[in-house]
Amino acid sequence: MQPLSITEKHDMTAAIRVEYFSTAWMAFEFIIGLWSGLQAGSILLIAFGLDSFLEIISGATLIWRLKKENSGAPAAVVAAAERRSSLVVGSVLLLLSLYVVCVSGFNLVTHAAAESSFSGIGIAIASVLLMPILTLKKRHLGQKLASAALVEDGMCNITCAYMAATALLGSLLTWLLNWWWADSVAALILVYFVASEGWESLQTGLDRD
Image (cartoon, rainbow, N blue to C red):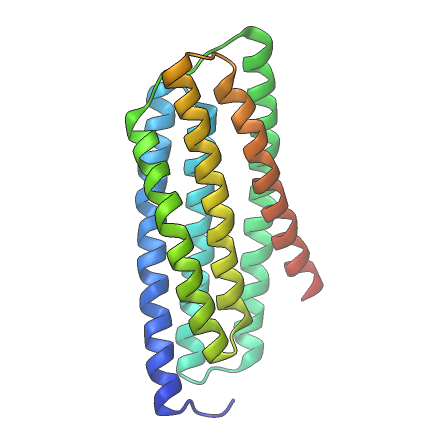
């Protein structure tokens, strides 16, 4: 691997900083989302928080990759770490999807209702606003560095924005209209994004094996 130029090193440093911020935000999102979900009995917010935890793993792996690439590590070492991370995250996302389907189905059958969560609504609004900004920043830096992984990670932020919007809609319907089924139905919609993300990540890991 050839040494990076001064411009590339500057862009690489900027990319690592963006990933640090993104991963730190996901940690905050995980804590607030999971706590809000447990407090309100909301499977929707619990799933949203747990997905954020998996994004932390993905983000940490990308930071490791960028640092290794910045220091001139062999491409094979970087690829092996990416493959392991993709397999782990993909598998857990699919298991999370199964969990959400089972619990949401049970809640719909038993008419179990979640309580309103203002903290959950707040974190969802913040994510809807922040994720597109991170996507644009990562895509810009990824194109400059010719890093497909960074561009792909930026697209994951768009998926996170869709998930946040779904969580926001479900939480608002529960709060404003007191629809007992809104949380479970929104959680099932969320499964589409979680499962798609998980399957893509799993296939990525298997294709590189």
